Image 1: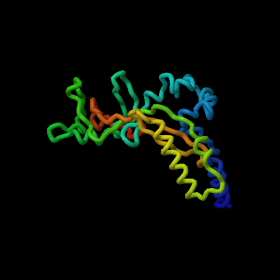
Image 2: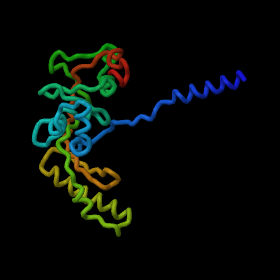
Image 3: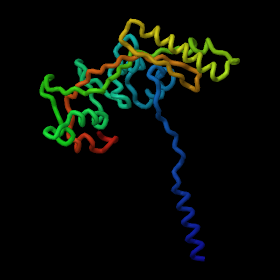
Image 4: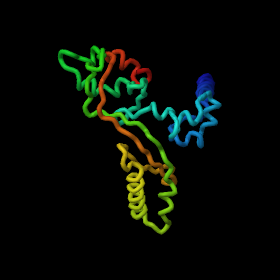
Length: 216
C-alpha cells in the first residue's frame, strides 16, 4: 500500500511540474516588412522607434547603422568615420592573422593610437544595405501554372538577373533577388560592400570571449 501511495504521489508531482505551453514571440523580419507584419505588437512591447526610423530609403534609419560583418556576423557603425563594432569571435580570424610571436593580439589585445597604427584585415568585408524593393509582380507576372518546376526556376533566374542588372547599373552596388513565403513574394536587395577594413582595437581574449555569445 505504501509503495502504491508513493507511486501515486510521484506521478502527481511529475505531471504538476510539466511547464505550460509557451508561445514564442520572436523571429527575424525583413526591415521593409516591419510596418506590415509586426510593428503594432512591437510598440505594445515597448518599442519607441517609428517604422521609418527602423527602415527608410529616403531618410537615415537603423538600416544605415547595422552592417554585415564578414560573411555571417553583424556589426554596428558607431562613428561618422565608419568605425564598426562587432562581437569578438567575429573578428577573431583577423586578430589572429595580424598577430605574431612578438605581438600576440589574441592574448594581449590591441589598440591603434592613431590611424597610422591601424592594421589591414585582408579578406574581410563590411556590407551596408542600401535598399530593399518588392519585385514580386515583376517575377510572378511572368510565371504561369503550365510551367514545369524546371521552367519556372529558369524563368525566375532570368528575371532576377535582369532586375539586378537594372538596379545596379552605373553604381558601385551589388544586388540579389530572393524568394520568400514559399516563392509567393520576391525582394530585391541592393547593397554596398567595403573591402578596405582596418583593425582599430581588440580586447584580450579573456575579456572578448567572456560569456561566449551571451555577453561578448
